[in-house]
Each structure stands twice: as C-alpha cells, then as structure tokens.
Amino acid sequence: MSDFASYPSLVDRHVFITGGATGIGASLVEHFAHQGSRVSFVDIDDASGNALSAALAGARHRPQFLPCDVTDLDALRAAIATCGPIGVLVNNAANDVRHRFSTTSAEEFDRNIAVNLRHQYFATQAVREGMRACGGGSVICLGSTGWMKKNAGYPIYATAKAAVLGLVNGLARELGKERIRINALVPGWVITPKQRELWLDAEGEAEIASKQCLPGHLMAEDIARAALFLAADDSRMCTGQQFIVDGGWV
Image (tube, rainbow, N blue to C red; front, side, top):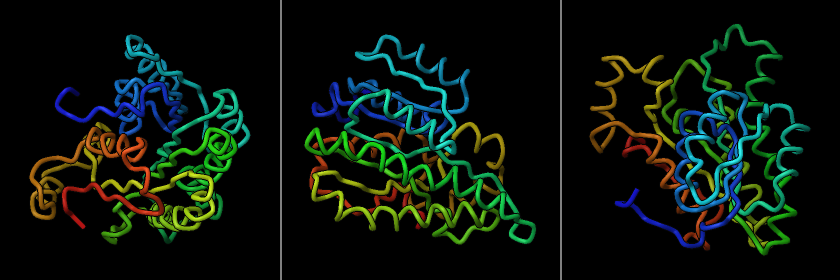
C-alpha cells in the first residue's frame, strides 16, 4: 500500500460497506482499514466476514463485521443504525448470477433487483440523516460495465446495474444541498477468485487481451483505490458522476 496514495481525511472516518466479506468488497474493507478508517461491513457470508475482521485486527480500527442479508431491508436498516453516523457509504453488494430471459419468473426478477439495486436506494436513505448532521458525506454506488458491453446471460443484473446511474443522477441534486456526494463507481471485468473459478478461461483471457486498452487483469484493489478517492475530501466537488475503471474496455 505504500506505493499508493494516503488520504488524511479518511483517518477515523466511519465507512459502511455492503457485501464486504469477499471479492471487491473484501478489498474495499482492507483498503479503508489501512487508511485508518473505522469500517463496518455487512455480508451473508459469516465465516469470511469474521475471518476478514480478524485478519485486520492490527489496523487502527479493527473492522466491525455485521452479519446481514441486504435484501432484508429491516435488517439492513438495523445494522446501519447500530453504527451511528456514517461518513461514507459504499453500496457494493451484488450477485451477477447467470439467468435466462426466456425462463425468468417474477419472483426471480424481484430477488435479483433486491440484491443488485434496491438495497443501494434504501441504504442511502438510511445514512442520509447522519451524514447531514455531520455536515456531509460520500455515497459510492457500485455499477458495472457489463450492461454497456451488451453482454448476454444476465439481463436482470444488467438492468439493475444500468439503473445505478439513474439512482445517482436522481439523487445528486437533492443530496448535494446537504453536502452529500453520490457517485457511481463502475468496474469492468474484475478478476476476483469467483470470476477466475467460474468464468475466466482461455477465451476470456483472449477477450481481455483484445478488448482492454491496458494489458493485464483488472483486480479488486484497482476498484478499491478508486473508491478511496471518491470517499476522501480530495473529491469534494465530484457528484452525480460515473467513474469507470475497466482498463479502457468501453
């Protein structure tokens, strides 16, 4: 981490991260903890969440893991309420499970929207009062370039991730009056352990090599470092924007 930026404004700032136990979320937890932030994070993966918290016990503030299913809005609101005022909200939780348009049920549609979009709206609603009382804050909503590429195989996920931009644009002016910034952080194909295990094959490697402007794999830490900037005071005049981190693919 010494080769990258440190943000004094993030020291002791309370950061709440959804879906923080694995993948991009775990990297977010780690990077904010190393900045000296007070991190609280939720996830349905108890084992990984507890293990991550323990692994970062030596940080300035040991991250607080709160088991929670973000599709249970009452549980999500309760988790946020136990944390006190939050200065940074990172709406990260998502699931890009593959599904077929031809066989999608209404129940499947609702479940997919709940895990990929709905919680972002209501988590933002839940932190607003505390941010306003503290004089402002930063909300970072994770999108995806998957819908921009017109990828097949996850139409509901693509719908939800496209809607993240609408959410950001729809709230930027209202929240901005309270010095609350809201932006979309939009990753490309991030090679997490899950992606490597399920979908990265020789064909995928060839596609990365041909489509990305920059060589190599896009990693979770690349997304986390962009989130640090959007959370810190350095980005104090950035709101209602999308920040794409994809190696130059789209």
